[in-house]
Length: 186
Picture 1 (cartoon, one colour):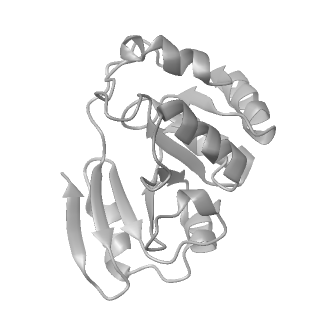
Picture 2 (tube, one colour):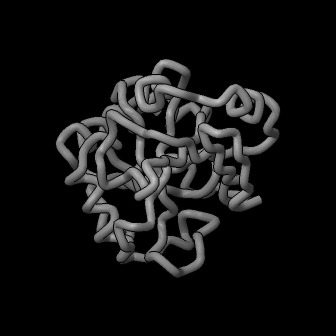
């Protein structure tokens, strides 16, 4: 795994995009602070930049660098969730502007999955995570279901967990600074 982390980090550091296993489905990712790399992902997915993507983070320090105000309920949801949960929080900062939604919110998921966690430890930055498919097409549940267009469109394919069948995408909950809660995807 360490060798794959080093290879992925080198590509990301140079502004590249990677195809990698997450705690949910296979993802396309890059440095969440690099607007040009984020734009490459939008182009590869044939996705409008108005449809924001989520970022993965590996701890409190990273979250507080991106969000000044984090509702207390966010920590409770992450602590109590039995499956990966993405929270959309208000007033994102210190990331690429083209990854922040028009309402200044950003979806974030705390991950403990070893590859993602250690890669972000090395990057010291959040990692973009969007499903490995062309926008509008079904989300692939395993590496073998990912289209050649996606595989050939990234700068590096991580050689881990390629035989694993994934469950499904994360739960998505929007939490606003004024305490509104909305479940976007169960």
